[in-house]
Length: 479
Image 1 (cartoon, rainbow, N blue to C red):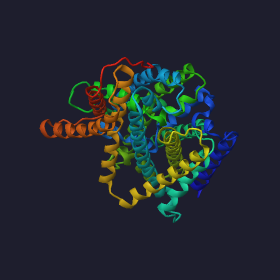
Image 2 (image 1 turned 90 degrees about the vertical axis):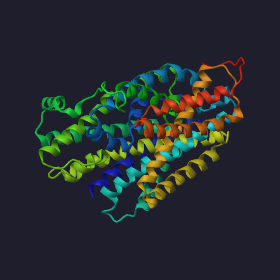
Image 3 (image 1 turned 180 degrees about the vertical axis):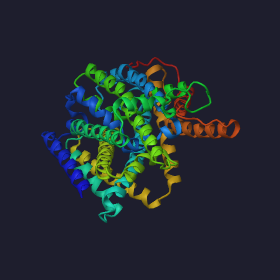
Image 4 (image 1 turned 180 degrees about the horizontal axis):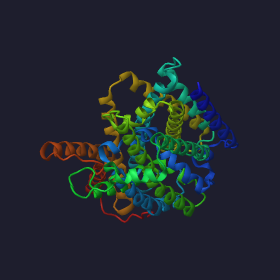
């Protein structure tokens, strides 16, 4: 009962914030927030928007299989955010872009522009759907199932709530709701850590000592270069992940483009880029503490890391209700901050990039509603299929689609050649296929499995394909 009350209060707060930010509900507000967002609010809110509900569940469990080596990726994030701040943001602000893919149209041509936009739409819709599906399953298990609410109904209600508080204010509303949701996420995370400390009778000094002596706290791996956790692989991959999945992703960039000036946007980008290291350190530290708690109670550790935090919630005895409330609050805050941002950016890209009608308010309203409904339908379809291998395969395919965006932007920014525009879609489709073939052959012949570095290979193949089909010419690049 109390979980329902907490969720109702949570969404009432979101609706209240939404009403305050919807005084002027036009396309300039929805797409760009009139370029008046305070940079520090964007920076704080973006931390929560970048942490999905899947991250909230999965990152603590990473320590069971890969220790704290994920922090190597997070250190690479910092380099990536610096590149985005001082290479990509100046281009976007100079051209006064609403959608970042408009740059591709100005530099490379219409087909390249449409290709980039469609790759984003496909990647973001499917990726966001799978992430939100996982969260819907968790909420169904901990909240709605006990109330007898069918999964289909709960999904429709959750997506309807997102539509309600974003339908008018769009990105302007999200800047403020993200601050609230990030605050809830951190409160939930810190209080869960505190509950674990109470159960283990640990002081802060004890926690630091336990983390220091536990082998699962190992961060750096320099020994085996073939390992997916080798430092330079993870560090460089982290940098490229940010460049592509933040700097070349309309979802991640849209709120950053609402700052008053380039300088404020750069301060915003650098601030929340650095924040990812301590935030993920907290998640990983929670994972180590949970593992130690289970071991001290002779509870078998789960086979899958994703099950570590949910297992703790299920097995907590005297603190069960409080812990479950915090768990649900953290999941809701993380997942909705990510999903509402994705749906708003999808609406923006469709109206601006695909339809080319940035000032058509009726189109924006219809598109936002249709995209939200499609989002709900896809979640329900995934549930009906109930095929984990299929979902994993789709997620893998989606992970390949960011490589072509990397190749397109690198070609535009760092060459002055003219691309053969009509062949761009072909190159961008073939490149991920080649990457899949390369990865399969490497596993079969040498037992080597590509990790995050496949993103760089994908981008390189796209770049080479564009180069081979391009011609030399003087072309003024905005960079």
